[in-house]
Image (cartoon, rainbow, N blue to C red; front, top):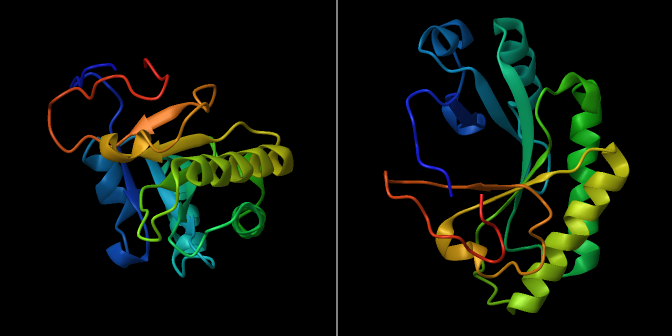
Length: 174
């Protein structure tokens, strides 16, 4: 995994939890990109406003879907992907985004098996790829990625809460 560097592009992720965002202040702080929460079980109430504001400020914009613990089957994963796709369409379609769509998967309170977590992730990723024509990213954190096996041909965005570089996991080396 690559090390952090001040020379790397700096970005943030946002949702309705941040309230009204001063996008001019964000860009003035050196942030160059933003991933905006589009959906969980429905569209984030600030998604469309955040996309519009971030684009108007000149930021590179991407959208993500948070897979929560209610997604317990492959069929529910495909349904979640369609909800995400509909939000992308409501924002102007996939071409309005500068960055690929993201699947955020980081919780297993339902105690699903690794095989089922992988099947859910694969179904979601394949459905988003089919619907948008864009290969999505996987976002998770180091302790969860071990639950997702055999999907290393999808780009990985791994959470980093410290300066420590996470070790390679589940087939990803970068």
